[in-house]
Structure formats: structure tokens, C-alpha cells
Image 1 (cartoon, rainbow, N blue to C red):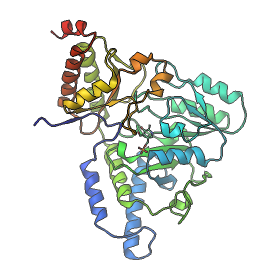
Image 2 (cartoon, rainbow, N blue to C red):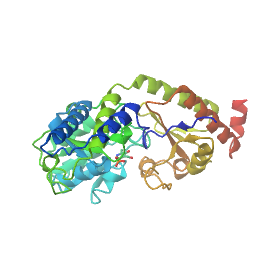
Image 3 (cartoon, rainbow, N blue to C red):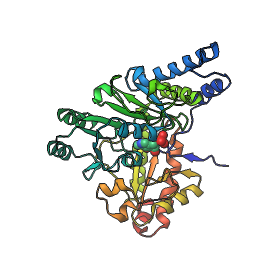
Length: 375
Ligand code: PLP
């Protein structure tokens, strides 16, 4: 049987072997990090080692790392915990940012999906209430990298706090909380080859006042109560160590080959936001005339896993607010699929995808021009 090709790392990266091993070892040991006996102290040690690894991944101090149940909780904690009532978020944020602040003002993006810094400046200048600005590091659908440091500098000039959802960054980009100039940064383990259900909100300043969402036993220094998900956190630490060593140049070369071959074989296709700086692992491909969900299902039958739009949570394909905010015509947006690579991706995977996708394009409507060019 031909092995399956997994090209959906932005939804969830496959668990790295070192992560599975670290988690299995942790599961074999009893102990609650809050217990004072030897088992508890050993558990505490494992917890703090993982905290140090996660902090190092983003060049933060370990004391600033608040472990959560994932990126969604970390985003909710950031957007609801600072006490700022005026909130500005980019129009292309993940649903967990947009839904956490339903009254937020949306900062528009340009046609390449980059947040408009002039719009941010104008919005902040027009209203002097203390604000919180939330701008993601890189978009999960298009891979577009945002000018976070520039946005943070503008926000700071206006006295705003800055949050960055950096979930798609580690292993693909340098992530340095100090260099970015943000106050709060969100991470999620399952995007870097760790387990789902664990993430972190990282604070640049330990002194930042943050109201907890969950109250109880006072874990995570009162910022997030609940017995820590120690196996998950240990897996997160192992994933953070591994992601720091990922070969980003290799990923970029794979992605570039995929794009070049896909466009050569299917000239009517286009790479969304091709003109913007993008994650080295992500390509959003539009194939006018063939709906995204049809492409995803047909590729699935060939054993190739990719995503359509932002259908990561519900399993159903909804119109993408990201592509709409970029002004993409509905027909183009409705034909876009996301292919995302990662630590386990190989050249054969890219070749199999291109082969299957080009064959699909050649079968679909508007395929005449490709028949000639693939001959
Ligand atoms: N932020 C971004 C940019 C994401 O891509 C995701 C996951 O799809 C999340 C947040 C949510 O993270 P989690 O699945 O850990 O809740």
C-alpha cells in the first residue's frame, strides 16, 4: 500500500518521536507538581524543565510562561485578562482571537494579507483610551508573516499593550518576544509536533497584571488554576527543544519546489499572497473552477491530506474570513486549499501531491490549457 502523505502541519503537526518518548516516560511516573513529597518534587522538576525549554524557544524568561490548555485558551486569557476594554485585532486573526473579543475593532489588511500599519496608526490616534492590540505572527491559512515588530512599536507609542498569536511561528521563523516588542505571546504545542491540548501564554514582563480565566488552586502562580497537564507539558517542552533545531531552509526549498511545479503544471492556478513574506512551510493554492472541498476530498482518496480554508475545528468548510479580508473574489477564495509542510515532510510527499493535484486539475472544468502544458 502507498503510504499516506500528510501535508496539514498547520492544523496539527505529527507528534515527534522524541515527544512521544518523553510523554510516555512522564506518564509512567506518579506525582502532582504541587505535592511536597519526592514524587511531587520530581514532577515539579519536570514541569520547570519544560517551562525553561518553552521560554527558550521564544527568548523569554521562564517565569513569564503560563501553561494553558492550548492556543485557544492562551488567546482568550490574553484578550480578556489585561483589563483593557478597547481592543484592536487584525481582520485575519484566528477565530480564537476574534471570538474572545467580540467588540474588538478590526484592523484592515492589504491585498497580500498584511496588516495595514497606517490604519493601525490612525485608529490609535483617533481614540486615546488605553488599548490592547492583537496581531498574529503568521497566518495559519496563507502563511503571511505580519510586521509585528513595526506594529508593536506604533502601539507602544500610543500606550497600548500588544499581544501576538505566534502559534504558527516556532520551527518556521525566529520568535523572540523581546525583539518583537510584544507584551503577551501565544503558543500551542500541537503545531510544533507536541500534543494537542497544551499551550502557553508567555508574558514579556513577569509583573504584568493578568486576571485569570480559571480560578481555584492557584497553579501557574495564580494565573491559571488547575492541576497541570504534566505529560502534555513535558511533551510541549520536548517539542520546543526539537523545533528550535528544525531546518527552515529545507522547508523553504520544499515549498518553493511545490509552488513552482504546481504552477508549471497548472498555469491557471495561483499562489495566494505570493508577493508577501510567508512562512517557509505554507502555501495557499487557488484553482479557479474547482471548489476547495472537492479538491480536499479527491486528494484524500489518493491518501493525501491537505486543508480547505480554515476548516480546522468544525470539519465543515466555511468561507474564509482571511481570504475575504484580503479582497479575494469569492470564486477564487472558494477554490483555495492550504498545503502545509513540517519536520517529517519529504520530497516524495511534494512530488505525490503535485502529481495528484495536477491530475485533478486536468480532469476538472477549465482544464484545456493544462492538458497542453502537461503533455
Ligand atoms: N491560533 C492560530 C493561528 C492557530 O492556527 C490555531 C490552531 O488552529 C490556534 C490559535 C488555536 O490553537 P489550539 O488548537 O491549541 O487551541
